[in-house]
Length: 150
Image (tube, rainbow, N blue to C red):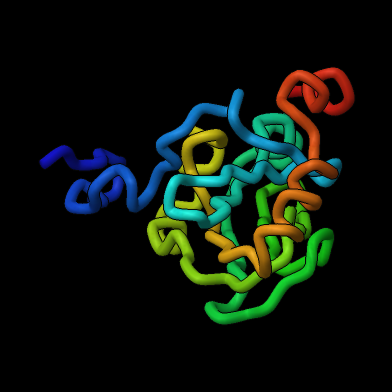
């Protein structure tokens, strides 16, 4: 069994418990710099873009949404703090928060090291019809890169 190796002892967690298994060319991006990745399990994994983590600087703290929380697309549902700034994290799609990346409690700086690999939380979409419509409102990597940076 492969294990994730991090600086602070998360070597017992399998990589798919910490990192998204897809690459950013599959992701959809919000204007507020979150990425959304529709995984094979039907859940949308959410993280922040490289542009966002560079603007923040060294991430020191992540305030996650609540498990079971119902969220709407565009709603501020979490916060991330660095030595330079604090920023809201918005839901890229509507649904229910079903999983949190607990590794971020001890090592929030993982977001700086691998912004397109480290997910913050997972959303179970409200409905397939809403999901398709909401994902269509988000940007491809190419479009996001021309408007905000990669």
